[in-house]
Length: 330
Ligand code: GDP
Ligand code: MG
Image (tube, rainbow, N blue to C red; front, side, top):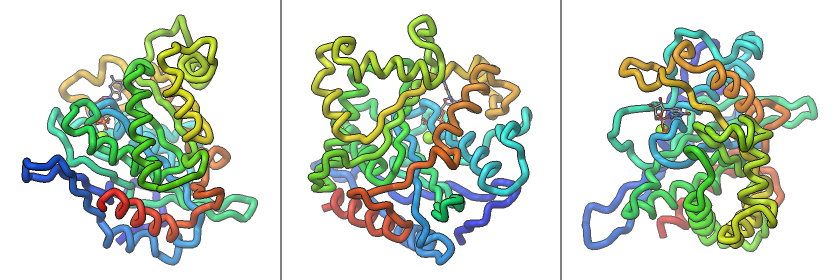
């Protein structure tokens, strides 16, 4: 059963809401999408949440680049902040010796099922202005790095962008032309599926650059991210000419685009017995987790999902997920 009350310890689990499998019959490259309708119904039509407006935070990007790892720290923030467990904001990051749990991370080189997962605990926030909000965290699994699965990736990215109000695009090292090309392809997929004429169909795109090393060019954090974004995407006189069209397309797809530069987590992550404990992470990395996560998840920064300018409630989100899903499967 889904739970909407959040208790002291983390009790939720990842739930695969959409799976994408390649068709075994090798004559076609069509992929099959499966929707976990029963679970979604149970969760999204519950009387405690169905009439709340919804904020959906998704993380997408290449395989094995720390997406689930980051989301598990987001979960710690969510339980501390919205779970009434009296943790001060200072110690939401948790115990130095606690293994990192939640969405499954690492898992060797084996590929997980491609698809979209949400955390089964949906977090609640009652805004002092009277608005009642439900917050959903979403993980995606795709590969991005192999041509034969490009369609799966596009599907995962497009669907998660359509469902979410914030899409965190997790990238290694720097924003490359490839990343922008992928983004363009994926958002094009989404636009076609939505048959939408709205100018900016999506809300926030948050680039998250992992293992940023060019500190002399731009400092870690949101400020450095802004500088990098200016250079690659915004300032016409600064960005490479070859990116021109890609950048213009992106800017017409998203309402808001931001970027954050994360430092490396340190060598501890390379140890065979690394279990995600804070004690094995560099202070600089922890400092930036403390800084970045509230920028997305603090009450004042939550973005409510909107479609055509209308704030979406949870039961309507369910309707849209079905619609989008059908558009992709037809
Ligand atoms: P996902 O496939 O993108 O969800 O990646 P995972 O979250 O499963 O993490 C894959 C591996 O990346 C794990 O071994 C993590 O320890 C490691 N990892 C997590 N965060 C970072 C990071 O910021 N930089 C680097 N280089 N590795 C990371
Ligand atoms: Mg993952």
